[in-house]
Structures are given as C-alpha cells and as structure tokens.
Picture 1 (cartoon, rainbow, N blue to C red):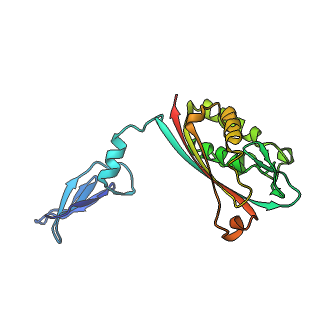
Picture 2 (spheres, rainbow, N blue to C red; picture 1 turned 45 degrees about the horizontal axis):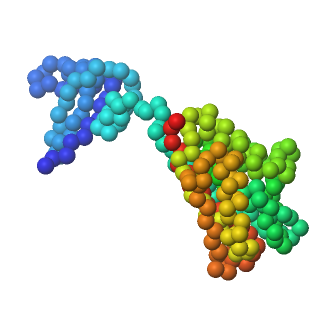
Picture 3 (cartoon, rainbow, N blue to C red; picture 1 turned 120 degrees about the vertical axis):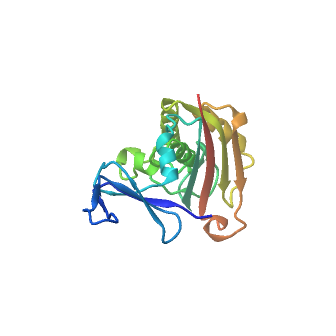
Length: 227
C-alpha cells in the first residue's frame, strides 16, 4: 500500500501546461506524494509565505479542545542531605535522637521532599526556586513553613491530596519507633487522613554515603485529585 504525505506551499506556485500557453499561477498548492515518482498537485488558498508540513496528528490536536482542568495530577520528589555531627536530625517535623543531623540552609528536614512532590504535581517550580537558599529569611526555617505553603498552593489550584507514598533511606537510626509520630505530624500539616499517607524506611545495605551513615535521602510520590 502506497504511503502518502504532503508538502503545502502557501505562496504562488507555477504549474506548467502541456500547450504553449503561459504557466498557470495558482495561489497555493499541495504536493501529495503517493509513490515515487508520481506527484499530484492540488490548489490551496494562500495564507502565508511559510513552508507548511501537513501532519494528521497535528491537525487532529488542533481540532480537539484542550482540557482546562485535569481530574488528577501526579508528582514526584527526591531529596538528599549530608549528615554531620552537631546538627539535629529532624524528619517530618520530629526531632530524632542521633549523633548527627542534616546540614542544610533550613532545618534540614528531608521530608520537604513532600513539598517538591506537590509542587511538581501542580506544574510549579521546585522548592529551591520558590524558597531559595540565597534568601536569609529561610535560614533555619522549619519544614512546616514550606509544607503549609505547598498545601495553600494545592488548595488554591482546586486540588486535594488523593494519596501519598514516601520512602526514607538511611542506615541509622532505626525509624520504626518514630514512624507513626512522623506520619501523624505530616498528616496534620497536609490536612490529610492517615489512611492516604504511607511512610516507609529503608537502609542502604552499608553502600555509599547513605549506607555509611553520611547522608539521608527520601523519595515521594503524590496523587492530587480535583475537588
């Protein structure tokens, strides 16, 4: 079966006639290639002087209305902090007893990754652009400040949390005794039911900086649904 595509020229296009008459000047023409070397010419009204490539998929998209509001949105966030002696280890707004903590511009709470996930789902800039570490007013700021702003933006856009799944990666300390406190605090900040917030903790099997207790990381995926 012969394949067909077309090149459309919007400007005047000369077409030679078999007689001695002068060439016919068409206002525009489409060249339809069905099988080499066969060419078919069809007239087309002039619209611009640009060369246009006809694409069925592009034409289809032009004819379909774009959705004004998405019924749901998905976002992902990732963060990693270096662990150093002399700093508190704050996770999800909870101070976790440990011999070292996160070195960061704010309070170093790795759960700000939840903020990035929400911002990503909304199609907004990341946390570093909205709360730059070059701005002294965010120095030592609690993660709750950023979380509340992300929730405000989410509500303003007309969405609410569908569900959230987060994985914390650190070698020490064990988070099992603190997971429920972390989750409860984050649910309060998010205004979410605990049934839609899941929190997991993994070691890194003593591999690289995470496994050597020199850093902490987190991944988070959120689903936002239209109110």
